[in-house]
Amino acid sequence: MDALYPRLLVRDFDTAAAFYQAVLDELFGVKPVKVLPEAAYANWDIDGQAGLVLYGRGTIAEVVGSTALPEAAPAQDSAMLVMKVDDVDAASACLARNGAQVVAPPQDRPEWAPGMRTAHLRDPEGNLVELQSY
Image (cartoon, rainbow, N blue to C red):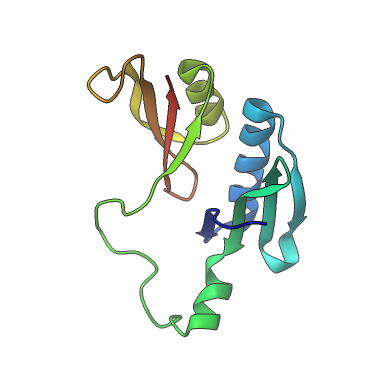
């Protein structure tokens, strides 16, 4: 049962889908279950459970009646996608190579947890992604 999983609402579905297809395959060997460009929908499962879903922002805006509102406003981040990886440096390079912007390079974070190493990047849609190992 898919009890809880992230669904990223994206403006540029094709770019976002290409980014996550590349990095999820390279980092975790996870292939998409389905990619439906005409529906602006893609999903990846991990061990039979939903792991990540991309969905067109415009479609949801129509459903919930928010198409007249601005797409974004300047603000601090309110959500972050976290990926636990074996090698933060290699994973950061992978995401950057596939179009992510590094906002905080790989660094040790002993103040967060013993042996913790993180990097923070923005995916092509601007979503904040944390890579971590510990």
